[in-house]
Structure formats: C-alpha cells, structure tokens
Image (tube, rainbow, N blue to C red; front, side, top):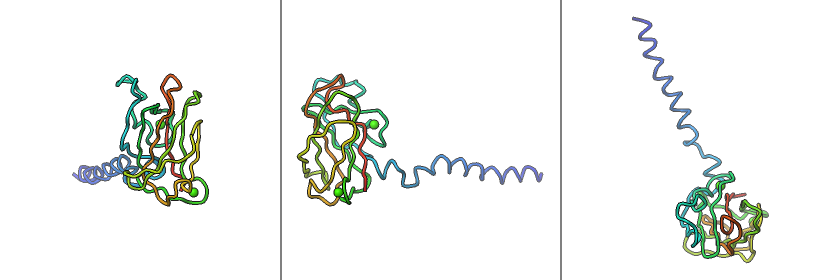
Length: 167
Ligand SMILES: [Ca+2]
Ligand SMILES: [Ca+2]
C-alpha cells in the first residue's frame, strides 16, 4: 500500500526531529557550561548543618544564578570548576552571586590546576562581587574556592548562588 510506505518513510523523520529537540541543546556549547561553574570539585558543609538540609547541596551553586544557594560558613568551603578556563581580561574576570541580606562574608581563592590556590586579599560580601585575576597574579584559572568566615543567617554563612566567568 502506497500510504503505508509513505508513513513508513515519515516516521524516522519525526523521530529525528524529536531526538534533535531532546539532544540538540546538550550537543552545543551552552551558556551553562561556558560561562558558569559546571562541576563541584569539593565541599565541606557547615559543621553544625543537618546532613539533609537543602542548603548543603553544593550543586545548587552550578549554572546561572537561580536563587538556589549552598551555605559556606566558618570552617566550611566549596571548590567549583569551570568547563573552560577563565582568562584574565580587561577589568573584572569573575562574578560571585550571593543571596540573602545577612551580611555573611567569605574569601575567594583561584587555581589553574585545582591543587594550588591563590587566595585573594579581599573579603567578599553582598549580592554581586566582581573579581579581577590581576589580584591573584594568574592569567588563567579553572577552579574557584570559597571559604566562609562567619555563621551569619538562618542558612549559616555565605549563601553562594553562582559563579560566572566574564571572559
Ligand atoms: Ca582582569
Ligand atoms: Ca544557584
């Protein structure tokens, strides 16, 4: 039957369209993997936090800012990695997004190999902090570490939402 042959030829096309829609975005360099931290390398949760607390899930700091945060308090830290190296371009190179009006503070360190970190002198605080790699004396970094300095707020310490590469 001609109509059956016709439908038989169309089915694979429909299938390819559906697969293309499902797979297409992940096959392309996406905003997620290019510009924002894409992997958790290490996390030490706030010492007093219940292990099932939502704010001790470090993957909440991956991808673009979305209001989901991970807590980094005194005695805790997180190390996130970028899919590609962040370069030291003109002006600021990294942006740190925080959530919460609790005035929590943190220190940032950067690394190009995930082993040796250079901690920046500035204490960071507030919703957006821009960082210049000049301060670390590095031209390329792949890893960023945040170390909490206090336990301010209901979710203790600095509430990290996202990291963004500006170059
Ligand atoms: Ca710079
Ligand atoms: Ca987030």
